[in-house]
Amino acid sequence: MSTPMKTTVATTWLDGCSGCHMSFLDMDERLVDLAQRVDIVYSPLVDTKTLPDQVDVGILEGSISSDEDLEKAKAFRKHCKLLISLGDCAVNGNVPAIRNHFKLDDVMDRAYRENVSLQPQIPTRSVPTLLETVRPIHAEVKVDVFVPGCPPHADAIWYVLSELIAGRTPDPSKVTRFGA
Amino acid sequence: MPLPVTPPNIRVVTLKIDDQDLSAREDETIIEVCRENAIPIPSLCYLDGLSVWGGCRLCMVEIAGQGRLAAACSTRVTEGMEVRTSTERLQRYRRTIVEMLFAERNHVCSVCVSNGHCELQTMGQSCGVDHVRVPYRQTPYPVDSSHEMFRLDHNRCILCTRCVRVCDEIEGAHTWDVMGRGSDCRVITDLALPWGESETCTSCGKCVQVCPTGALVKQGTSAGEMVKDQHFLPILARRRHAR
Figure (cartoon, rainbow over the protein chains, first blue to last red):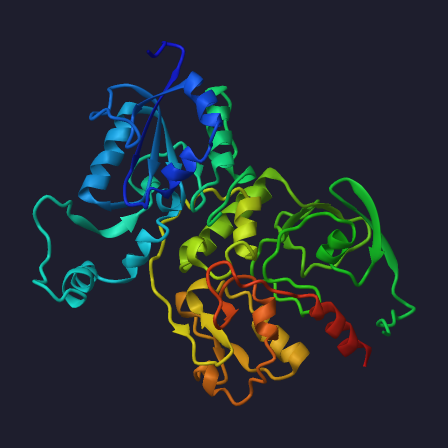
């Protein structure tokens, strides 16, 4: 059971590869230590289906590429006291943003018509609508801490979280960089 | 190897850099004195052995008594000069310059052949660029893979002109030059011919080695594989000057 002393953390991925979450898990035995101090209240890594009203730290991986990504980012901003952009996609667009060089229609054609031999069609049901331009998270909502890297090393994530839990302001440039 | 002979009438001046009392030859620039004394000054266009360009503006310093900033690479030392290399204002400007370089073209570090060996990437980290506050321009630039040994990716080019200067001043070929203005500005080979069709290029690869980013790279390199070696430059430069 959670105690009131623990820092609550929510995470989710937008347009990313989930590699940053994998890097988070790569903290190995330090996860046990972390579990003493934080409560993961919402995340692809846990079973909770809804984002709680009040969360201390929100962690977003991936860029904003669809209407669903945008909604998630806004919800995280609304419900999280502190918001972290985790990884290059969240921080600068990275690989998802490479499609910005092309028109969205051309991108869709390439993916769903040109390279498909059986019943080529553009999916419309049960999938989020893509935005014309892929943006980093801070282009849409205010972000408090930026942790670049593709993915950021587990040591970097550990450093940032430890500093935040201790009430200090981390300087991620000391431990990570674009493309790290 | 013969060193360049110092003319006997060069005087020595004394100056202060970041409260350190230093002496230097009067024909030296601020950045040369800083490098000799292990005072860090960021720069991307300046390279020991090439002529001074003064384009990147990262080496700007404050000089006591002067309202405007001065580029350390193109400012000679003078007697009694007092220089500050890392004030809060300079750090703010440098961070903004690096952010604008990242926003101008397409520097996707994670998939770049120069990832981990890039001067722009390292500069971003040392200037505290953990995100870019200006909107990305998102404009694609062409890639020239016509040369059998090398590749030119304009998306990664920061227009430092090191390639232009090394080709002209050290190799003596002057294959490279600069064309266009503003965001259309780009480096070209011969009269904007594809690099592979250049008649002046000797394929020496000096431009590739001095390029600070992944704009000029060897063919066949994958992400993070392009490691550059610039040790040849000061050696060749001194031999050229000794003549």
